[in-house]
Image 1: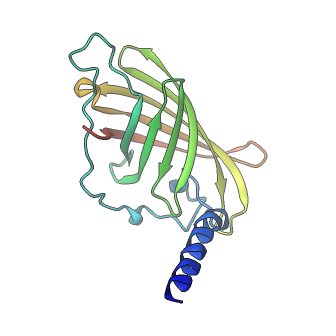
Image 2: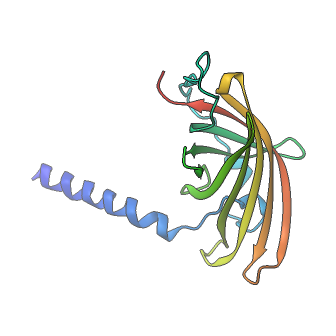
Image 3: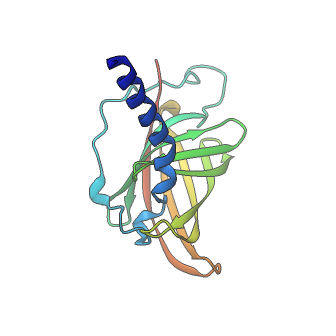
Length: 183
């Protein structure tokens, strides 16, 4: 009997995990004021994460951004805007999940413009506090790999659009990232 109740409860949790993300809206551009449920006050201190040393250091392979990163975004005034986990793929795609509830998913494409310099074009949808689509955004980044490919730093710029394609806000700042993974 107890096992049946536990399995029923566990099944409910699994179903909720699949349904909840569709019931709550969020966007990577939450700092633009389009999503009042998301606040920079939600910034959290992550537990100590394992820094993965780039296997390209000391080898003949060029240093690469490919891998998993913990990214911190700062506004142009120096206050924290966001934190995220960002996955860069060898095929030129990029996928990011920010800490905004319930977890913001955004995607982009990247290329290496010069050795150690990465250009990113990143897109997403913007929603209001009721989960209604209100527009989209484009984020661009220029990042520079450092510390033998174990960190990067750069600048970002968001352009926020309404549903008619009109620019309604723009902002930017700096970012820094540390490579994550198993040693």
